[in-house]
Amino acid sequence: MTRTVFTGGQVFDGTGSAAFPGDVVLEGDRIVEVRVGRHEVPDGAVAVDVTGHTVMPGLIESHAHLTFPSAVGHIDPRFNPPVDVSFFRHIEGFESELARTERNAAILLDAGFTSAYSAGSLLPMPVEPVVRDKIRAGVIPGPRLLAAAAERDNHPQRPDGHFEADWQGPEACATWVREHAAQGFDSVKFLVSNDDVFVPGGSHMTQYTAEELNAAGQAARETGVWLNGHCQSPESVKLAVKAGFRSIYHCTYADEEALDLLESVKDFAFVSPAPGIIYANVYEGEEFGITSEVARTMGSVDALDGMRAIYPEICKRGIRALIGGDYGFPNNPIGRNARDLGLFVRELGYSPVEALVAATQYGGQLMGMGDELGLLKPGYLADLLVVEGDPTTDVTLLEDADNLAFIVQGGAFHKSPSPLAA
Ligand SMILES: [Zn+2]
Image (cartoon, rainbow, N blue to C red):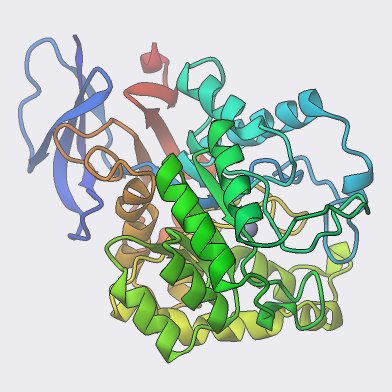
């Protein structure tokens, strides 16, 4: 097998150490060597001169919504809650949703995200497992994907208006988990708290009981799926931790007790603040009808303040907070996900290296592949980027795909500036 050596550049290996001059050697789908300093390129190896660039692990999105309609170059104003949700009246069926999700997967990979953990589907259809499997089979381009079921709220009136008998209660929650596990989903998402976006004051409403969530947790352990929770209120964070949820999203209004609980499960659980959408609502929504008044009503102004208060503390306590989340809205389209890195630095108090670790090492752990994904280390999968400049001093370089000279996934060159890809 031919060896490829990225040489002449800086290496950021994802561990949190500073970037260093070095070489990264690939063979097949793996990284076989990471060498500090400059070395002779061995006979028969292909040398790629990456002077002026940084080699780093591929980015990992922790809270993807590939079924959301808006992506860079494909803005769909019909899914723009609370201003417009007419999207739901135009759902065409499995084929269209599949096609859109595949398009979004390709756009996310083009943005440098070589893996993505889904935080939930918009639709009660098993689109994501199909997309995951097609990517895995090498049939379509996209990030390595873990598929999540449709987001479950706890109101018996379903989006199409009908009432579902026996929607609530522990048994219904456990059944939901078992059914989605049987359909091949990797995780199941519960809207443990409501959200100001859906109902005024919703972010402070916890809509599941401990009994319901514990039953879901038990079913998840039995069937081998992970649980994701949309958790804004302090109570929702606490209930989710106690029920064994693994991805606990937002945590915007977590109190001291909720933080202590999160810290107690920090080797197991992950949090994702999803600052991109909140920032976009507060500062960049005007064009889509999200005026400052609307942003305030939908809770985004408070949410940004909440995140700014809590995430420096989450970082300090060593709770793994990850980048990404809630891209897919008109003012926050899929493909712009790397913006979260800059928001971690500017809004949440992370250093550039801490933000990069959140986007790489922690992402690999979230994917359940921490022993082979998210770091540049011998034996790890060759998922990496070659970035013009030094993202360890300026993470915003990652926002512009023109700065991504190479995108490599499993040793295959998805993007390359020269015919060398062949
Ligand atoms: Zn979300």
